[in-house]
Each structure stands twice: as structure tokens, then as C-alpha cells.
Image 1 (cartoon, one colour):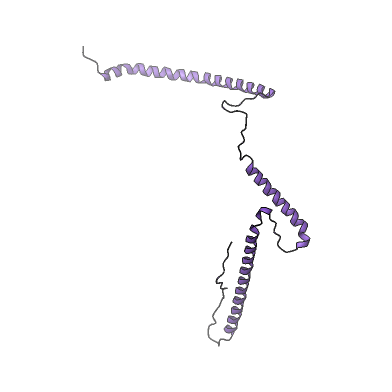
Image 2: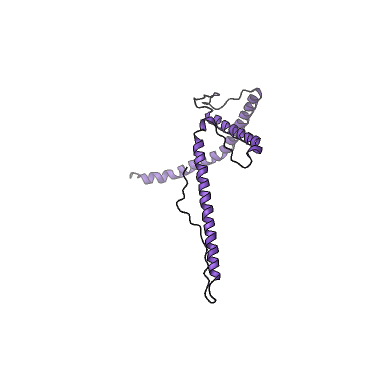
Amino acid sequence: MPEKTVEDLKAETAPFTAKKEKLDAQTSLEKAPLDAKKDLAEARMNAGVAEAKAAIGAVTGPPGITPSVTAGTEAGKGEAILLAAAATREAAQLIAKTLETKIHDRDLVLLLGAESGAFSNYLQFTLQLRVLDAQFERAQEDANALERKANALAHRQPNGVARPQVAATPALGGASLLL
């Protein structure tokens, strides 16, 4: 009797392997609805238990979570800063409203005691702003004067000569803003 090769053995067992796989698939198909019903029943039971615990106030969380809070040294610092800023803004608005009839169109600067050093920065900023406004105003006046002169010269041209169109742009030199 000749010896069987691996291929011969695989060929002989192939029908049995196919039959086993078919039976396993049928078992899985028959078992799936039963597993789904079991999972549904467990979920309903767990929901009923949770509802009963909630009714008496004995709800527990997942394992590893404890019902405690540990506050560090910086706890609440950010919230306190936000609340202080809101209170400061509200106080400044109230003061400004109270002084509204006395200050008219003048600027009102309210600073906290700790920020009094920043007042010189504010004064420097307003001074530079006024200087720039004056320079821009002067440049615009110069541009308007040049435009008037150009228009006057344009009207003096002899007939038949094209009149140039001149548009003056304000020149600003040496202006800067430091903060």
C-alpha cells in the first residue's frame, strides 16, 4: 500500500472540514437571536436596578471613580481673576456714568492702585496719538493747498494744450508711534 501524501490527506478530510464549518455556521445563526434576547434581558434588568437605586439615592459610578474632589493650591484662581475683572468693569462703568455730566467729552481713565505705573504709558500713548493726528491734519492741509494751486495752474493753460490732472497725496515723514 503506497504512502499517502499531505495533499491526499487534505483531500480526504476536505468534505468533513466543510461539513463542520457548515454546522458551525448553522449553530451561530441559531445562537445569535438567543444571545440578542439574553443581552436585551440583561440590559432591562440592569436598567430596572439602576432605576430602583436612583429612587432611593444609591447610584454608584463605574469602578475606579470616587465621589471626592481634591482642590490644589491654585484652585479657583482663574475664576477669581475673571470675577474681579467683571467687577472692575462694572464699577468703572458706574463711575463713568456718575461723572458723565461733569466730564462731558473729555477722556476718563480709571486705574487700579496697582496699575498706577501704567498711567505714564497711557499719557505717552495719547501724546503720540495727538502728534500723529496733528501731522496727518497738516499733511492733508498741504495736499489740499497743492491741489488748489494745481487746479489754478491748469486753468491758466493756453487753448489747445492738454491740462494735466494732478492729485496730491499727503506726504508724511518721520512719524512714528511708540508704545
